Length: 371
Ligand SMILES: Cc1cc2nc3c(=O)[nH]c(=O)nc-3n(C[C@H](O)[C@H](O)[C@H](O)COP(=O)(O)O)c2cc1C
Image 1 (cartoon, rainbow, N blue to C red):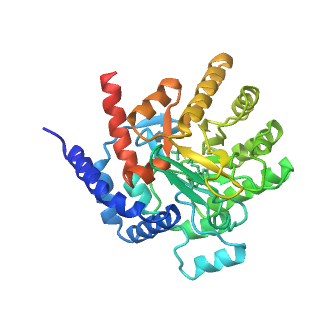
Image 2: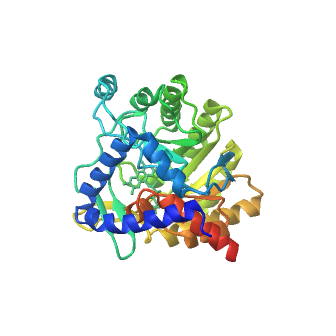
Image 3: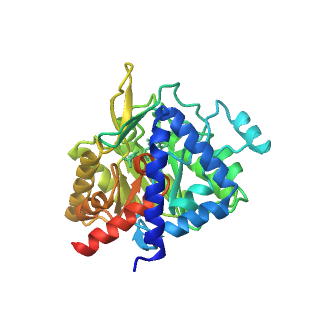
């Protein structure tokens, strides 16, 4: 007899099959705005989000990056990151006025399990002007040039302070785009994490995002040996017993991967998230935008394989979190087969809806049983 959660997933799958065509009638940007609006409403109905999550998620505790995760599939950075602001005073004033500046902060963890909040930067960012988001249904891919829009670490911490945060969650911090000095970058991320810690917010892990391709900074430059060394070491010291993860891009050379992997290990990074989006020409205009979903999968999987190879060769200790095109259980199996301990997903939420992580984790469990 099927268990209650299998039935829950079946009902959800049928429901989302009806909702998706309506959602996809909107432009990707409008659909994204609508989805965030619904998540904001669900933030105020935690019993409903909690029930939907409970009815679909089968616990599958997984150890990765120094953390006990409730499932091997978690939500990647970039969904629960909040509104963009042009300056810190405006962002803090919005928090003071009671504005809901981070939609999904409560509902997404209840629906999906472990979530990485952010990326937050030290200072708020407005992000890029529209168009910033595309989807390709045939390949289940997304492309974005949101440009690290976020309220900044001080306002994000002020907003989350004293709120009922989930038992397991990560905070993603990004380096400040355009800053070349590694010491300044180190000081800024330490200051950023300090806002959360001072507010009594203790994330289960912190991820340093070294690799956003959608800003004025050169993401390759941000993944240099010198910067990684200084910033990671500063963060590890500031975090104490909170594990540090680092997120890299999909377009590093084999030589860069070898160097960075050894730097990460030497400073005590506990997991490498591979990967962020891949910079590629946007479907319109003359700019690049980060490719994700189906078209990223092979690139990210190759980075996971290379990282696992270097890890074995030098006896390095970090875990690997696969990220890119984790759209179904088979993709998760491919990642774990290549050496990853867990997987993060973003585009799956577009193509399979807000309970996608539960569906993917259940498929992965079934896949693992039969292989
Ligand atoms: C709209 C959007 C915003 C994103 N913002 C961030 C971000 O702020 N920080 C980050 O580390 N990754 C960000 N990402 C990248 C995702 O976390 C993930 O690495 C990427 O989408 C690949 O996973 P996927 O193929 O499952 O979508 C963003 C992705 C999308 C689509």
